[in-house]
Length: 279
Image 1 (cartoon, rainbow, N blue to C red):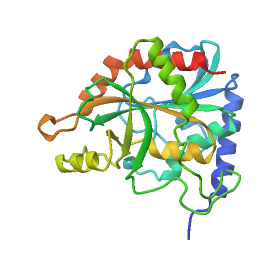
Image 2: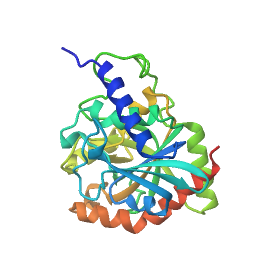
Image 3: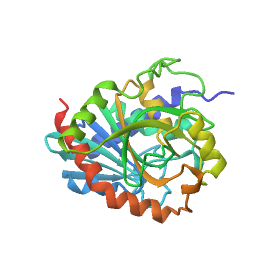
């Protein structure tokens, strides 16, 4: 029997009601923070925090460096909700579970979503610490957050993905990078299931099919956001070089976190700049 998505609507509604009772801020925008990028929440004014395990129906984040908390507050003059920590297919979650927080954000009235992640660089011109704006993706994660019976209250059965990465949002990011004199690059993100890093032959394959970077997250969230008609911007930080093969070095999660934390300040500046430019 296919999973009925009606239950997702009711569960997301219950989660949203719980959050509304706990925080006094109505968020206009939301940010999902990836590995090693949790520092942005420290700059929020009037921050209010709810641990994921306190929110009805929310998954639990099990990944090192993911705080596992929802944080609401002000960044500049914008009311923002930060998801400090995300969920992955390799943790054992389904696509629908990974996308569930996006359903909750929709019910909270969020008008735009900024997603961050760290990724391996397939483009030979990328270096560790480089920020790349995702312009498209290739989904190789073996599940889809929309699989199952569709609930029209959540979105249409067959959402078009041509503008999954919002052109308006992307232009705001380009202008923000220009103001910061930062050489922002744009590329195609490949979603891989993990948790192991890819083999050299897989890196070659991913580059040949058009990938500029590879990671283990983001794609289910983007698909869900598109289904929910939430505009999305994705900024990815390159953590290690994956191509050409002779440039590959063994990489640990500690290495990834170190690169992310070292280069997080410029990513945070860019996010703040983008938020300042939004209505």
